[in-house]
Amino acid sequence: QVQLVESGGGLVQPGGSLRLSCAASGRIFSINAMGWFRQAPGKQRELVASITSGGSTNYADSVKGRFTISRDNANNTVSLQMNSLKPEDTAVYYCNAAIRREFWLRPYDYWGQGTQVTVSS
Image (cartoon, rainbow, N blue to C red):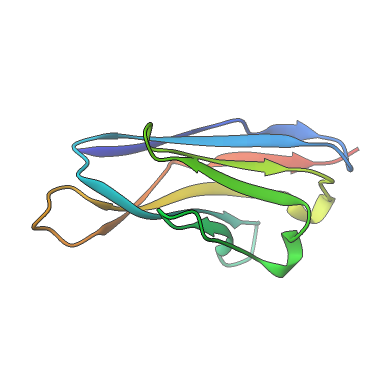
């Protein structure tokens, strides 16, 4: 089994910062892209940021310059540093990873359970 466990959500005032972390565990041969998605009430889940195993990053336009994604390949973790938070960043944030469990298997998308981020005064 493979699990993604997130941590770091919470309540923060506008302009504040939060750091989300996600750790992948279980039977893992390799991890391709890792990323963070979010889903606000009444809206579709959207990509926030992603990072390849080589470190190439991609960000949603709405978070560019404010959020930074990073990963530690040795420990199978991915983090999202969120600065200058706005009320519209309020959502449940989900960790995602494309994980190959064995070398002969294709990568499969795994998801964390989600962590709530609320930006409010």
